[in-house]
Image (tube, rainbow, N blue to C red):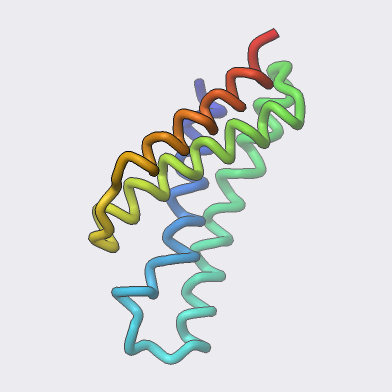
Length: 110
């Protein structure tokens, strides 16, 4: 569970680093946007690296860690897109997420 919590935090910061400027930083010079995003990405690394080390030490394979990270990334992005960017989520988003979760189940279950 700590691995998942760290991956959630990591993905929140990386999603913010990649996409916050689409609305909030629209008038901000690109050099400043890049600097802010790098700062957020540094925080993301402070969660991602321990998440992967801990998960691996607990017996997760690198592939399991990656697919879990991708599923969490999509979940976090969907929430970010809806809440921060105001983009509606539809049935196609839900269907795609179900397919991704199928991939997670395929790789994680032994």
